[in-house]
Image 1 (cartoon, one colour):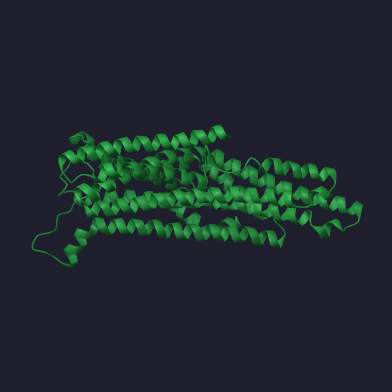
Image 2 (spheres, helix red, strand yellow):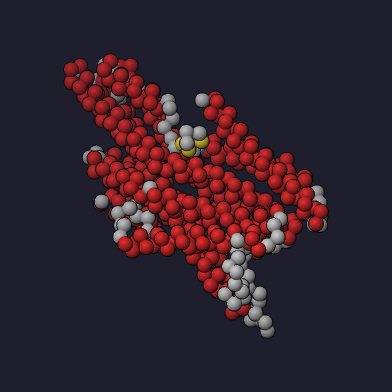
Length: 431
């Protein structure tokens, strides 16, 4: 556990805070998970209950779902990590075994470099997410802060920016409602940061394994090696290539385990994430054009920024994995493979054929996590708002205009999802 304790200490601390660290499954951590899931689920129900007490309209739908989906994403990710605790432990055990198997100083330096990058990523994610949470908290607590710093004759009105229903007096139990909201978002943010950081850590570890395999291939068939006398040269090259193939197999199996463990999670997150981003974009347009609610508009803007950055970073990690697999293929192909014995060429051919499959993270065998996937979502969103922009902004703020606004939003949302899945379908057929 030396490498895990030293280089992945931040991941261990974050996951321990939410009871997800697989090596620490005590009764307290089990109780912690039950408590956190209860807080998250009850907060989701509290956000959905306004549908039962208020008159249903499209404005209420966007107002509620724009905040329900982000917390639903956090809850789903948290619950699936609880279910996949054993697979997460297997991944971490494999990381430790890979560290222990390395003896070459240069290879150890490579894996340390990627581990340091993973640690830096974890720190940046925590700072970024909690900065966003702090910004939303300042907007929520602003009336209370102003009452302390700049008191008036009467207290400023206190209200939750997130639409909820508890069937009690909001004025009397406001602080308990606020506590429930704050706990839900703190738990959700911590869980999101911890789970995202450990997945990126696993991706970077797989990249390190592919990098080491590429270096082994490069060192095995370089010109200086071919100058060795024939009998000894054949054995030397074959042994080097075998070591590279073994490392390549380790990397491939690690990626397969990662995909099989969290492929369902990735698929669910794509559906929830795209839906959440769509609702938040339309809610933001409503707030800045119709209601002029700057408080909620600020929170929704922060959520939109977090959505886009999360999607980009997640797809960037998948792209890095694809790039490392492709780099290994190029290293093998551009090397002096034609000058090695036939038996060794067969091993190299195995690597080249395997790498043409573009080893990467896939969701249900449909969506490949890459920058191309992020571009698909981005282009669909841009196409949606370019087509709907005239219908959204051509009216002034009247009741009739609200009807036109939400009519455009509903149609635009449908068009966006249809366009997105059409592009995915075309990509499948092309394969």
